[in-house]
Image 1 (cartoon, helix red, strand yellow):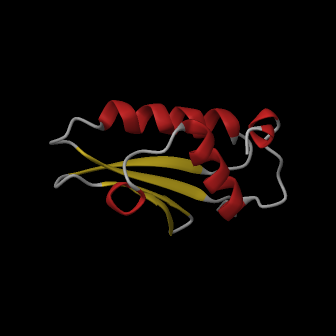
Image 2 (image 1 turned 60 degrees about the horizontal axis):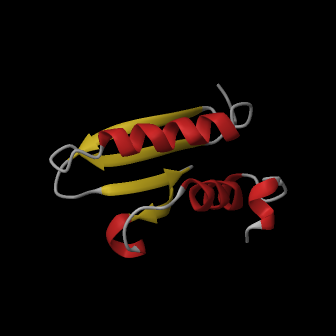
Length: 94
């Protein structure tokens, strides 16, 4: 069993947010390909769009006001799972 963290993206099928969820999963897998164990997509309803890293909610659409851009999502995953890791060019935009 891996000690690497996992990311879960819960998205609303009624709102047609699967494409957005898969794009975000792709971005995370590209940036953290050697560092994370999995990105899991979980369909739901009722306007849900929530991203968890190792069980900690790092983005919730209603709480955080919409959807994160790729850079913000990567920063939040990094901050929870890999605080010592640099994100290269994304760090300069902070």
